[in-house]
Image (cartoon, rainbow, N blue to C red):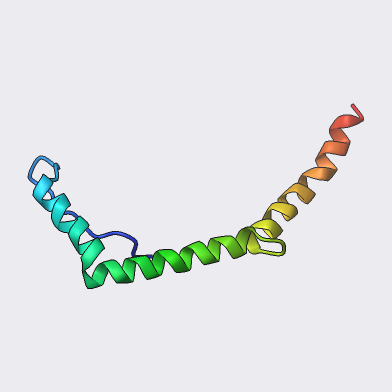
Length: 78
């Protein structure tokens, strides 16, 4: 799910401003940036499909709610 470029850290775990600039330029201007944008666009479209009517997220949520309904009717009678 490549949506980022790795950052080179210093010994203390910090990232220099030059490293951030280098990676931002790669994302904005480089070939890797094109790939990352294409992957992000594909993930956006997949997410939209998942939350649309009949999508996998909607179906999973409906199943979860349906599994709770019998429990709710038991609790309401007590």
